Amino acid sequence: MGKKGKEKDAEPNFQEEIPEPDGLENPPDPPPEVASAILKDLGWEVFQMPVTYRKYFFSTQRREARVQAPYFEVLGLPESDFRTITKDGIWKAFFQRRTTYKQADQEGSLTEELKDEGDRVDWDLIMEAYQVLTDQQARAEYEARNLLQQARHQLIGLQVMHEAQVREEAALAEARAVAEAAAAVAAEAEGEGQAA
View 1 (cartoon, one colour):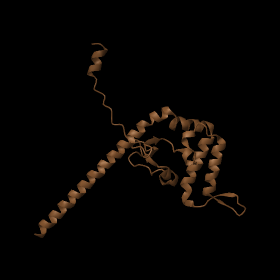
View 2 (cartoon, rainbow, N blue to C red):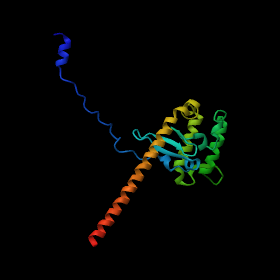
View 3 (spheres, rainbow, N blue to C red):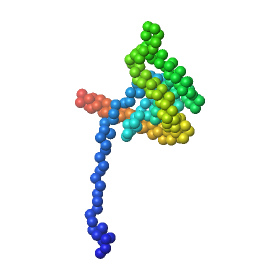
View 4 (cartoon, one colour):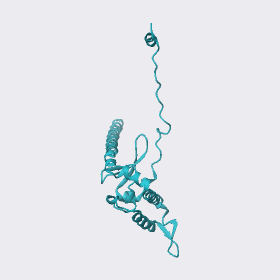
């Protein structure tokens, strides 16, 4: 027989299950932006993707998902004008935010200390927004991933995944509540049966 006959006689090669990468069983801590008052005021929430645990941002009001925070809005700038906002406009908006969050010394100069240490997450978000929007390459990447028309079309998949996940969590919570109510009724009936 030729080579073909030998291949038929060979034992089948079974692949072992590929183990999950370390760390996926236990989700990491939620990202710090979850505690951001700025994002909450703007109507944005921070979530993690189910398998990769990468963070993403979702606005229920706008029914929109993003892979990065709404940096223009974080600085108090209208996002609809993102194409015409200059570095000077970004600097003015950043300085306005800075006067809101930083302490002033006796001469009136702003220090690096926060007025309220509880605002650390918001200040870090403001700094991140300022750094991204003033760096030409980082801003172009941010706009391409979040604001341009093709990015909005691509982010619809993230939006659909988020909404499906929310529906699934609501269904699980409802099923859990029904099961708990049934268990309570069964326990009450069992208690009455033993008392009689």
